[in-house]
Length: 439
Image 1 (tube, rainbow, N blue to C red):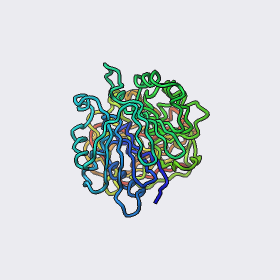
Image 2 (cartoon, helix red, strand yellow):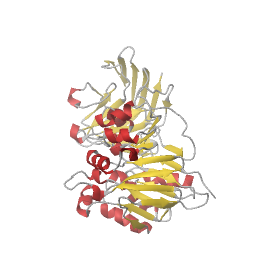
Image 3 (cartoon, rainbow, N blue to C red):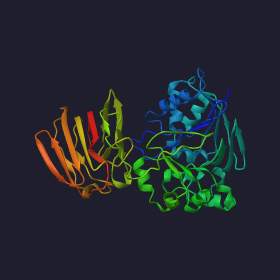
Image 4 (tube, rainbow, N blue to C red):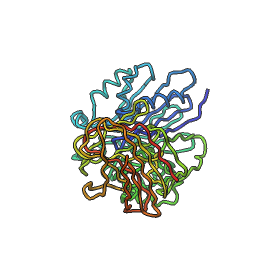
C-alpha cells in the first residue's frame, strides 16, 4: 500500500523558550523520518506520538526509519529523551543519525548522556553521516553537505557544527540548514558552486536569529520558508540583516512560522496558498474562553534582566511562577501578536504565593528595560480570587482598567497592534478564567 508523502512542521510549546525545532516526514511506505524533536519540558513528546499515530498506517505502531539529530542542543533533542517516559513500545525507531563534536563540548550544551541512553532504550542503530553521503530512505533522498568535522577549528559556537542536508521528496527539494550561522554559511559557499543551493523549500537557519547568511539565502532562492520560531521573535528577526532577502523577496509565496500553527504539506501536490503572514494580519471577532486555548508566551531574555516564567496547565487552570526578577507573560490570540483596534480582556485569577509586584502593561511591543516602561500595578489579597477587566481603544489611544472597585484610564503610548503583557516579580498566580475578544 502506498501513502502520500507528507512533511509536518511541529508547533512547539514556546512558553519559556524562544527556540525549538522538529520536523516529521512520512514516506510513501508509511514509515517516518524525523529531524530533531524540540524541547521536552512541556507537551512536545505527547504531541509527537499523537501526530505519528494519526499519520501511521491504521492499526500499526509508528515506525521511524531514520531520526536525524542536527546538533547537540536541548531544543532539538529534548522531546526525544522524554519519549522514554512513554515506554519503548509507543514507536519503533530503526536508525538514529547524528554527527556531533567531541563529548566534552556536547556535555556543556545538552543532556548528552540521556540522549545516548534514549537511543539504547529504543534499541536503535546509530549511524554517523559524513559529508558527501547520499542517504536514500524509501522515496526520500538526502544529500549530506555539511557535518561537524567541516566546522573550522577554533569555532566556539556549537550551532556551527549542525548537520546540513538537501532533501528531495515528491515534487520538492528542501534545504535543511538546522542552526547553521555565519561560519557554516561561509564554509558552504566556498565548498559548492552557486547553483548548488537552489531549492523549493528552505528551513531558515538558527530560527532566524543570525542564522544563514544573506548570500546563502539568495542562492537558495526558495518559494516557501519553514521558520521554526515563536511569532513574536519572528517579527523581530525579520529586521535582522541576515534575513533581508527572506523579508523582501517577491518570489517567496508562503512563510510557515512554527509559532503560529502546525503545518503539514503534501509533498506530492502543489502547496495551496493560505496567506503570507504579515504583522498586520488580524483575526476579527476572536473570542477564547479557555485559559489553555490562549497563547501564553513568556517574553524572556536573561541578558535583558528578566527571569523566565514557569507556565503549566492543570484542569483548565494556567499556573505561572516567577523567581526573583520580573517575568513578562504575553496573552495573545492564536499565536497572533497583533490585536485589533478595539479589544477587551477579562481575567479571573488569584495570587497563590506572595508577589513582590504584579500588574499589567497593555501597549508594549518590545519591552527592553522594565524600569523605563509605564506599568500598572494591581493590589491583591493572597489566595483570594479577583476579577480584572481591560478595555483598549487604540483609535482614541486609551485603555480602561477595572479591578474590584478601582478604575483607571490609561493613556496608550502607541496605536500599533501589540500584545497585552502581565508582569509578575516573584511569587505565583493562577488564571481561572480568561476571555480575549476583538471588538
